[in-house]
Structures are given as structure tokens and as C-alpha cells.
Amino acid sequence: TIARARSGAVTAQASGNVAQISQAEGQVASALRGFYAVAENYPDLKASANFLALQEELTSTENKVGFARQFYNDSVMTYNTACESIPTNLVASMGGFQKADFFEIEVAAEREVPKVKF
Image 1 (cartoon, helix red, strand yellow):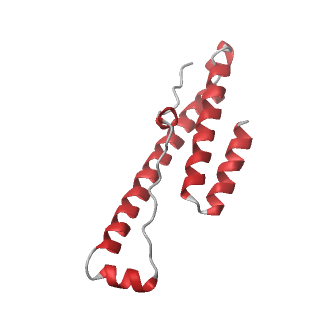
Image 2 (image 1 turned 120 degrees about the vertical axis):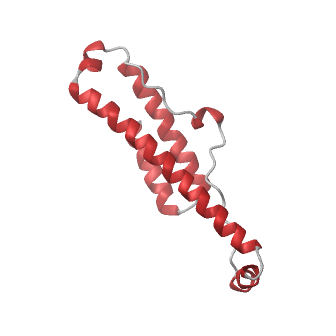
């Protein structure tokens, strides 16, 4: 299910629709929570050097995703402010520029960082 969720996230990314991307990212996070739950039942797996490396990589990836979301939302805020400020609002209205959507996760549970306990 992780591979399917990741594939859905890649497809959503290609569409460029922020709402679809947000939903797909939530599905990836949900699938990872299930992975962690299964891994907790296998103590030998938790002690494996490869699994520890995977755990570190997942933490690093989650941090990178968080920073990318923040950068995107900061850029959207700057863009939206420019679309509403004089004189750039005149150019924006003539050019057909519209306000962009922020990247928001609607379900509170999906906002939480997956807990990694091994």
C-alpha cells in the first residue's frame, strides 16, 4: 500500500492541483503509519542496521517535506500579496493572474509526524 500511495502522490504532483497533492501526501503518511505498526511486531527487524538506516532516511525525508511545504506556502503568501498590492494588482488583473492556494492538510491526524517507535 505504500507503493500505491506513493504512486498516487507522484500522479497528483504531475497534475499540479494543490488539493490533490495534499490528499495524496496524507495517504502516504497514513500508509507509513501502518508500516511502522507492522514493524513493531518484529524485534529482530528493529535491531537491523538496514532498518535503522531506513528509519533515519524516513525522518530525514519527513523533515525535507516539511521544509518544502513551508517554502511553498511562503511563496504563495508573497505571490498573493503581490496580486493584491498596488501597482502589481493592476498588472495581475490585466494578466489574468489569480490567487494561489496554500498547501494545507485538512485532516488533523494527517498533520502529525508519523511516530517511529521500535
